[in-house]
Image 1: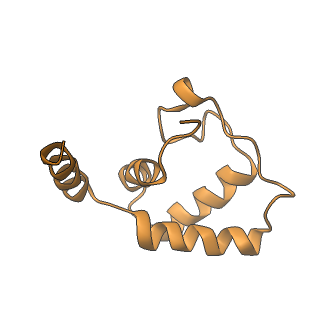
Image 2: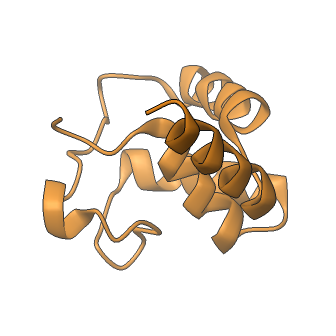
Image 3: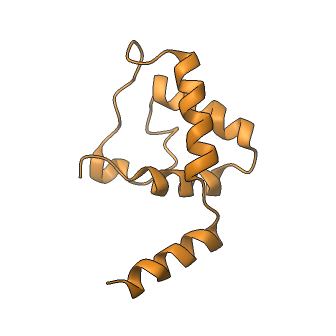
Length: 91
């Protein structure tokens, strides 16, 4: 694995932000201008800091990606815990 899983990242995003608009703004800002100070996941110790995606994706495209991530990958603590239990049972 070269990067943390997207669901795990979104779990930490839900812990850091309660407002979906602030979460989206943070995703867009971080993807374009990543710094350790902005990182919400502790995985930078394991994976390092992601490279900036400036020039690889437009802000309009990134808005669409951020909306999709928030709508499809966000999970609350209770959902995360239930998901962890489900995976432990299946092992």
